[in-house]
Length: 367
Image (cartoon, rainbow, N blue to C red; front, side, top):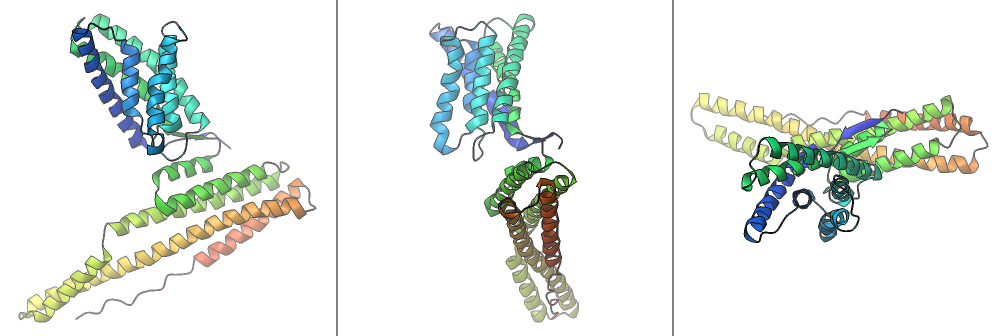
């Protein structure tokens, strides 16, 4: 298996960077007023990080207060209690905020994986320090010493570099390309189809974990290949279902049907022969489109049923492992070969059933 890395929910990452800039800009205005009116020194590194993190996190409602409190208080530990020298304190603060974001502040169901949290924390630690260095260079060479504009630039630079460091929160990293594809697909789906993909991904991982317990050899390689094919087929069906759903949602079958009826009525009421024929041709053309929509609707039902059947096949594969371990007298290699052959036969049987043609609807009658 080769390492596979996929970017998931790219729009979330782009929005996060924008929100981080907005949050840091608001904090820069607050810092400017605090310095000008109350003569209070405001640390640009910490407050830029705090403003960026508060605006960038997108926790679920159940964890909203927890996550937002964490991104404010936890980074302050590096400044108030640990006494770390600069830039280590800023690196730790940026890493902590990014780790919290990857854990519960990414806006998706469930927690971020340990890999996502670790990579986000490490990357943000580096980019935060780089951002502070860029800020120092800009202050020394290009920006005036006082005013709101240099503050806005300073805070924006720190926020931008820190938000770039949160990119690993949107990466699906796995040594298994099939599992990575499932993770990427899961992040783009909603509703029941997403639940089926999640179930298929979980069953695939469980089955692969059981397969790795068997003796190495051609039998195990074939078994792992069969399991990968079962999962890939489930993911392909989910993708096809999603595309078809989008096509059908863009056209209302009931609306097309009402237009056909309206055109036929107008054709029947028309006094001019040429106008009547044009209306009849328009009604016939829309009638063919209605047949096409009807065929797509029935195809969607079939794809959904096939997706359910494919997930059930993965469930059956997992059950086969349990049964084989309990009753098979074969050794690991032979058992893997037997399981691979059995699952291949089940997949072939399922494919032959799914390949039946769709029943055709009678063509629309012409008036």
